[in-house]
Length: 85
Image (cartoon, rainbow, N blue to C red; front, side):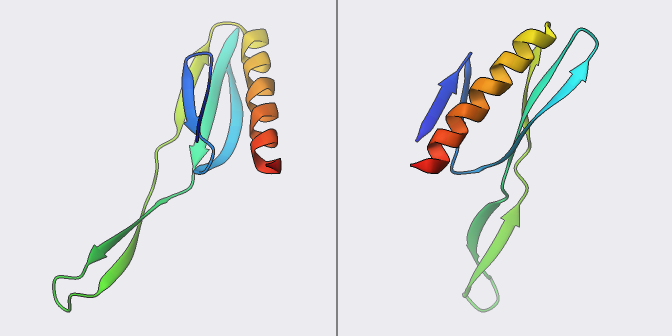
């Protein structure tokens, strides 16, 4: 299930962390994800091997720290509701 708010769409199934980084008058809302697990066939023995690939964080810049805080609070609330259900 994909959730969206303020032009950002996120799958909470893969979300590991949500944080803010202040930068000047505004800052970044940063979504960090769990590693992607991919099963690949080993060319030597034909067995499936589990490989882990790092998912890059997604960030959104806000010009105003109050907008950043508001968006952060909204995402935290929606994520908490997702975790409860």
